[in-house]
Image (cartoon, rainbow, N blue to C red):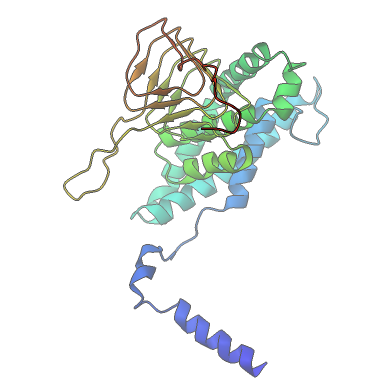
Length: 299
């Protein structure tokens, strides 16, 4: 026990030593931080609201739906007020008293966005179901498909980001990234009837603009080609990701880079590297595989 006590004292002193220069990169929380568990609960409440009966134990029927909806929305509002307030308290210089009213207002504004979030997610469910012969029903897609889980988190995070809520949107989007392998930055703009088929490895960057009726397959990257640096040598947050117009299909493992435009009704084949804009109705495919006359195993 003596050795443990000495180790404990030594390491407490080392871990709280403010003279270590590298420790300056870690913020020192003087106030309450956002709580990951509460943010997960926020997402689950939204899922229970927009997909009644799918993500709760409650037996929601025609006569009880309004009751449960009221309970869920009230709980959601309380959690949002608290977590938005915590985000502002820690990530801004304002006092907690100054941001409480703002936090409550933004939470209420988000509640007012729930009908539109529900409508958009319904279009996403339809797009996924209609485009996948393996899907047996809309209910199966809601329960099982990772793209819907990712889009629930994205559509929540996107609205919070538009309201100017700090850090919560990124936490919400990264929760989906960890669970599904689909990485959608909350700043991306995505239209209705959006479908990600399979989904693993999809990356959608912060300044992407995606139209309606767009379908992506696994491994697609909508990324930045390069960064513009400011006078301090740091990357500037300017538009740097693709614009994907309506009715575009991008097949598996294709990479679309830079502030380019993929014109409407275009098809980008699998394993394509695209860094230039293409007009509407384009068909972009990689070079066809050619048979080899060399013996197997020989170069």
